[in-house]
Image 1: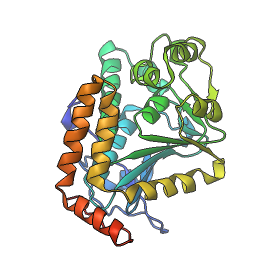
Image 2 (image 1 turned 180 degrees about the vertical axis):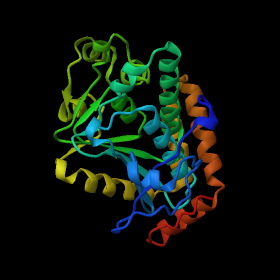
Image 3 (image 1 turned 90 degrees about the horizontal axis):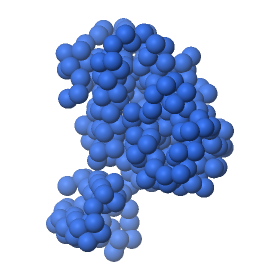
Amino acid sequence: MLTDRHERTTSYTIRKPQPKLQMKHKPYRQTISEQECMDENPVLVEREPPIALVTLNREDRLNALDNRTTRILHDAIESLAKDPSIRTIIITGRGRAFCAGSDIHEYNKMEKVVEYMEHQKLGRMVYDLIENLEKPVIAAVNGYCLGGGLELALVCDVIVASDNAKFGDPTLRLGVIPGGGTTQRLTRIIGRNMVKELLFTGEFISAEEARQLGLVNKVVAAEKLIEESKNMAVKVAKMAPLALAKAKKLVNEGTEAPLNVSLSYEIEATVALFGTEDRVEGMKAFIEKREPNFKGV
């Protein structure tokens, strides 16, 4: 772990489509009261098997990530990773932003370099968790997606953006550089010179420009964002979960290895999957012209 386990706070609210909020799933490591969870809830979780919707809920701060919210987001994702009824996760933000990055108000209170270092490590812990998660994660980007918010979207597997979304990283204006992957992950997606332009100028690009660059998968009307993201999540959830996990891992890691090595990994993975019950069910369902009932075994 990159942070002290005893200092970790889990206080996300699990929300279902009903008038009264309930804590039906036990948080991964609950260290504050349930009432405090209900009062502050910076991260909302709605479980609608086979999908789950995670919403950043700091609308007054454009869903900026302070340390507490980042820890809660980590534990929410970790909880969903362990829930066998959830096969696809959507991350979005409430209000005018997906996420405007780190909370600069918190930055300004940091007196020691070690505090800033711990903040960066905490962000890295969340980003790595999402990127390496076996379950697919969709970023439903509404409004501003900046700095650490852009880095959060980058570790998701698919980005669906509203037509009013704005992408960018103005971190250099603060006298520092991105610490959560913009210089590395984004460069691998849109290329070195485009990343330099975005960082050096601090300018934002539209959702359509981001789509043309290969950063965004799909642009939809703002009022349809969650609906379209859920539709995609349900489609993804119908795939064989073991095959999804293998495909995600191979695509994520394949570009970092020589082609001949990656091709060998691909063969090994598909051969391993051939011996699963899901493979038997998938091929049987295809022949019988019906929907498969995958169980992840």
